Length: 131
Image (cartoon, rainbow, N blue to C red):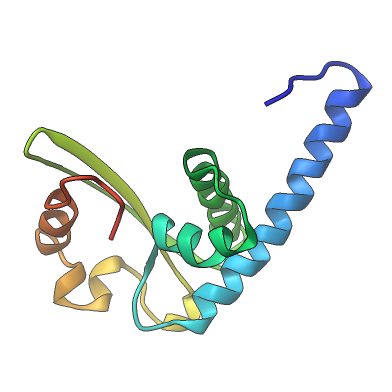
């Protein structure tokens, strides 16, 4: 990442916010298209971001999560964080869904998304890639 100072920095920040807003809109469309289960940040990245050629996984996961959080702040998505430790590995994920799904908390999606089942599923990943 190139760091700029002065007027150039302002331009870079404006471009980044426009990109996040466009990405947030695409993520919102995806959340609205599948109301039967929540989307983890990894699924959002793999199904929405990756097909557009953005392959820097670690950085783009952060950008994806920020764009999804933008939807939450605007009231266009709901979110729950989950965190589990298993076999010495700490795994965290963020799950998002559309308010159109008529579910208020993750457990409303059924037994697969209730604690402790969802935590066991997350902790069972030998290499954490989300749900």
